[in-house]
Length: 260
Image (cartoon, rainbow, N blue to C red; front, side, top):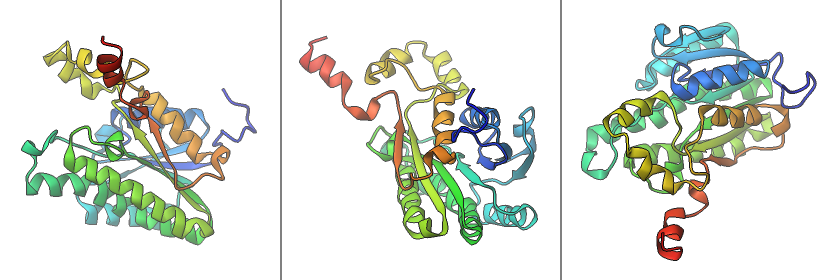
């Protein structure tokens, strides 16, 4: 536990977390609460937020950018801008080009990029008017190199460009924006895949230098750092939290150079 006056603490701060009911989202809520923040949870349905330690909620379906903007604008009118936002909501289904068509492409960009923009754009304006604020976008290693999921990858890469635009154009107004790119995260979303194929990790883990997937808490810890005063001079950056996946090609080293 950090000391009360530590720059890593978020006491007295309000943080809005989208996708709060998901595997990473629940860990974000828990970790931000442990850091002293009051958390506003956002998700599609109130039931998805049951049991979380929240100071408030805001409901919208990020697949509908217009409705998302309307919900956030109404919430801001009542509550004002939060101190920080973690844009975490996202979704993918298509894993390769053979599973992508115009509808899939449009849907994944709508949820993962257009919806994230619609949610954060009004907040960025409110933060800039107030003179301070921090945003963290949960992107993906798919934004940095291709690991499948073409539409999702394009959307997540768009989040990096968007965050950098905020950092450059709103920095003078005291607004920071940074990006976290997780690798495979061991959330309950993996449970059904492992139930269908218990050997799946035998193919996944050899790609990761740490020999394991990332934990949701590790993504959350990085987000808390970015939102804290400890990162007050950091904006426009991209942080892989990926067990070393994007550092290099471990499988190539093992199979070609080491002859394993």
